Length: 222
Image (cartoon, rainbow, N blue to C red; front, side, top):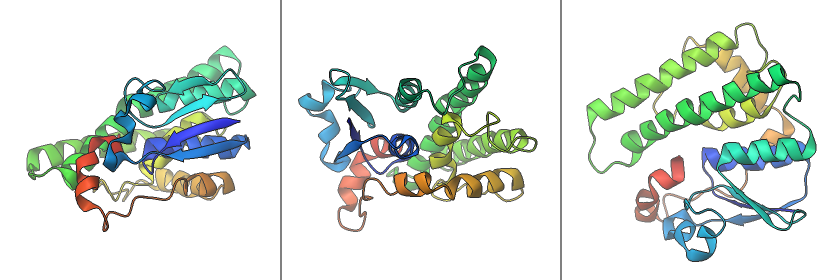
């Protein structure tokens, strides 16, 4: 049994989608970011960085894994699925996974913060991160011109990237003209496991606790 500590953020969705794809038994502990539950001492023992998602593998001495990309790799290697075992195939998946972890996530996350949550609207910062997010989207679009999925076959690279790109409107970034990316977004989004995983946990209702949501800021989005 996997215990998943998560919240309704793109990084959180990666872990729940992966678990649904693998059909592994898991339980969910929804972390209240607005109340800074992720900074409490008990959680910092699981993830010293105080971020979600994190997992504990109860079938492996409650082994804890934090960082969303590391969770995807761990679960792929645990099950032998969604990542090739040959050197070249594995490298291709890892390259696109790192592209998401080092590029799409951080840049789109900053676009979210400055566009949606920053108390002061700074046009330069908003434009900077929206433009860079769009540039990264064009890289994905070019890759998908001749590939159904990012690494050839459906893999953890797609699972890592889809929760971010699917929330492009929240970042204020258009996909107009990126037909290959739009096709991929629809194809991945129609997978039953993605549909199920994307609903875990129940999203925060921003209308009920707007100040707590604003306070959570980057913890919620990156």
